[in-house]
Image (tube, rainbow, N blue to C red):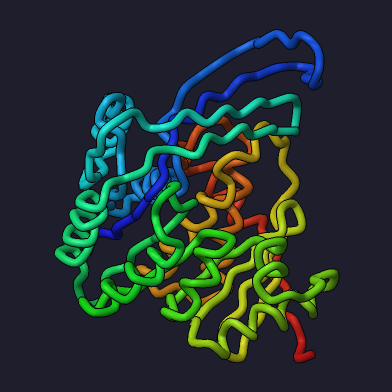
Length: 311
């Protein structure tokens, strides 16, 4: 059964390589590229490369949809995006060595009928056991509870949800009990109001979400790895050392690995290896996807898994 990814606020990622980038002075671009992006689009890209049939939906500006359409066709991703008036935003990514500076625009505001059309499409796709990935920011003018309402609709059709967002939409969505949540450590700390300065504190914060109906929480911690928490288990996954080229899309590649593990019923440790390897692979490249499967498998084999003892 195909996985469905939902991207409410996609972007064309314009990545600029600017050695020695500094604010307040003239900077010279050494290289530039444009990629179809947005968190759910990036997740779909990784899943397609891993051999998972994928449907992508959300809102897409009709005026510049061509880049996305070419990308979906090349990757074999089924395009179910709702076209809306205007142009999809462009996000600027300035890469200097292993540092990335993001300049993100707010994006288009879908009309009420556009939102209704998206809900109709998602309700039609919802099916028992089907996984949905809801990922990214909420466009301006769209209520913060849209993810919560989408989760309710998906659950009404028997579907299951992986959620990756932040801020108020994340807090609102918690009441709808998505099966899996993937906050980063800063987002989790903001949501729970806790100082997360130890692995034990991160675990406790993750378990507080389990108490509210979430079945699995994955907390990404950048180069320190990720903590995977579900009922009775907590694993710390440490990625192998890699040369960082760009951090854009690393969390999305991790979500792709999580979903791959879910649909293949992998044990938590194996799922953690796949997810962590996805993030490690992504930072070594510019653009989304996992096109070198041999390198991905090598990284997965090098992920270190530690079982955390009871607190």
